[in-house]
Image (tube, rainbow, N blue to C red):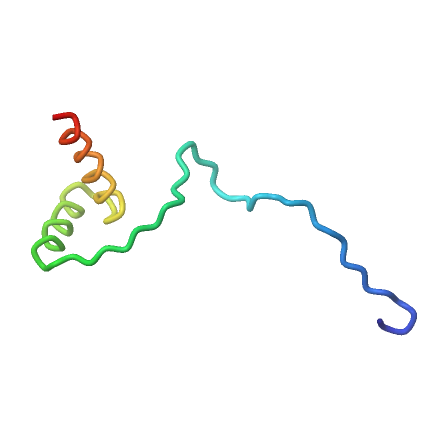
Length: 70
């Protein structure tokens, strides 16, 4: 309390943070350790296709879906 003034904290409404809107939110985080060969393959793919490491890994995981159908 400061000389006659009362500090009041009002409950703020629950709001989501504003950011870039997306139709495909990515809420799952995965940490992986790669050996030298896997890292080299990933790096070469990223350079050739001009994509990030994250995008290349997502593409690789999606290719695994075909193996599930067999």
